[in-house]
Amino acid sequence: MRLSGAEIIAHVLEEQGADTVFGYPGGAVLQIYDALYSHRDTIRHHLTAHEQGAAHAADGYARATGKTGVVIATSGPGATNLVTGIATAFMDSVPMVAITGNVGSSLLGKDSFQEVYTMGITMPITKHNYTVQRAEDIAPVMREAFAIAGSGRKGPVLIDITKDATINEADFTPGTAFVEEKPVFTSDEEIWEILNYIGRSRRPVICFGGGVVSSEASQELYELVHKMEIPAVHTLMASGVLGWDDPLNLGLAGMHGFVSSNKALNAADLVLAIGFRFSDRVALNTGRFAPGAQIVQIDIDPSEIGKNVRVHHAVVGDIAQILKKLLPMLETAKHPEWLAEIAAFKAEDYQAPESETKLHPPHVVKMLAEMAGEDAVIVTDVGQHQMWAAQYCRRVKPRSFLTSGGLGTMGFGYGAAIGAQLGVGGRRVVHITGDGSFHMNLNEACTAVSYKLPIITVLLNNSVLGMVYQWQHSFYDDRYSATQPERKTDFVKLAEGFGATGYRATNPAEFRDAMEKAMASEGPVWIECVVDRNEMVSPMIPSGGTIDDMIIY
Image (cartoon, rainbow, N blue to C red; front, side, top):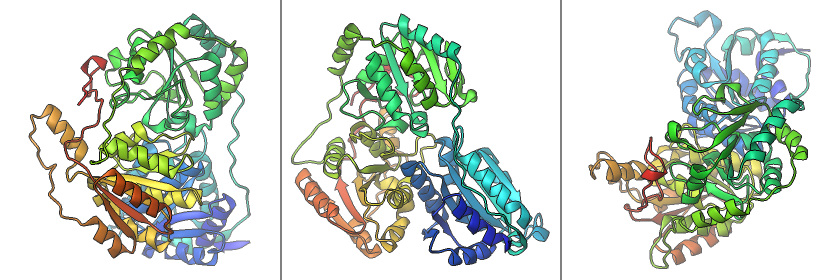
C-alpha cells in the first residue's frame, strides 16, 4: 500500500510494539502528530511539559519494563531539549528510539527557522543515528533503529526526519516486531578458565552491575551466588537484582558503598565482575582496586574489557547465556572462613541515626520503602537523596530502582517516574528527590496531574544543594559557594497550584501519616520532608581514594 511518510512512522511504531510514546508537537512534526491522531487507539501519546521530561519519561518506561522507550520532538529547540535525556540513556545503556523532525530537505544547511544539525549534535551520545530525507527510507531505518536500540549493549538511537519525508508518499509493506535472539554461548574453553579461577579462590566476591538487569540474568546470578556461596556487592544500577535481605548480598559498593562491601572487595582474592564497567564511582583508584584479587570480567561489550581496570580473564557475551553455560559446570562450594570475615566487616557498617522527633534521611527512605512495599518501583533524582535511597531502599526485584547512574542527571526523576508509572500500571511508583533536583523539572507535575498518575514524590528538603554542599564541607573548608540558594518555595502550595496534593512532614509520625494518605490517593502527591542541611551521606570515599580514606560523618 502507498502511505505518507508520517503514516509509515505510525505503522512501524505499531509493528514494533511501541504502544506508549512521549513527546511534544511542533511545526516539523505536525504531519507525524496528524498520523498519531489517526492511530490514537493503538498508540498512546503522552504530552509532557518539556521535551527533556519526555526523554526521561521514555527512559523511565524502558528501565521499568525492559521495552524500548520512544520519544518524539520537533526540530531545533525541540531536538536539542532531548539531548540531556538521550545522553542519560546512553550512559546507562537504556534502549530508546528518539524521533525528531527537521526542516524540509531544500532548507537544510541554510540556517532555516528551527534548524539544527541534530545528527551531528547527537552522534557522540547515541548508539547510532540517522538523517532521513525520503519517505521510502523511513520504514527500513525505523526497523533497524529498534533492532540496534534493543540488542547487544542496549542504548538510544535517533532518527532525524525532514518534513518533506513525512509528507511525501511511498510504498509500505507491513513487517514484524524486532525480537532479540540471544546466541547460545558455546565456548567451553572460556568457561573452564572461569572455573579454574573460582576453584583456586578462597575469598571470592561477585561485583555486579546494570548489565545483569539488561540481560535479564537476575535468576542466574542468584543461582551462582548461592551455589558457590560467594558474597556479592553491586553498583548503583543493580539494586534489587539480589534482595536486600539476602544474606550473601553485601549491598552497594564504591564511593558511598557500605563498609562491608568495600572491605570485602579490598580483601578478596578473586573478583567476578559481571555486567559492571569499573566506573570511577566504584573503582575510585583503579591502580589499587581490589589490590589482592585476580579479576574476571564478564560483559557484552568488548570495549569495556580492561578499559578502566586490568583484568586477568574476560568473557564477552550475553550475561544470561554465559551464566547458563557456567552454572551446570560448577560443583557446589562453601566458604565458611571467608563468610566469617565478612560477618566481621558487617559489624563495622555505619548505623544511620533514627529518631521519633526529627527526620533523618536514611530513616525516611526505610519508612517509605516499608510502607510502599516490595512491589513498588523507586525512582530517584541525583544527589545525597539518591545515595540514601541506594543504600536503604530495600528492593528485592530487578527494575524496581531507577536512577541516573553514569550521567548523574539532576531533574531526571519526575519524568522517569511518569514513564515508569505508565509502564508498570498498577504498581506503586515512589519518586525520591531533593530540593535542588526537584526545582529542575518539577514542571512535569502538570503531566502527572493531567494523566492522573498516582506517583508519590518524597522530597528531602535541606534547603541546600546537598551533595556539593557535603563536598564543600569535607574538602573546601566549609566555603559554601553557590550551594545555599535560600529559595522560599512553598512545596505544599505549589503542589496544590499544579492540581496535585501536598503534605509537609517534620518528624516520623507526620511522615507516616502523609505516606498513608498518599498511598490511598488516586493522583500525584508530594511529601516535603524538612531535614537538616548538615545531614551527610556516610560512608564516603573521596575521588581517587581507597578504603583507607573512608570518611564516616
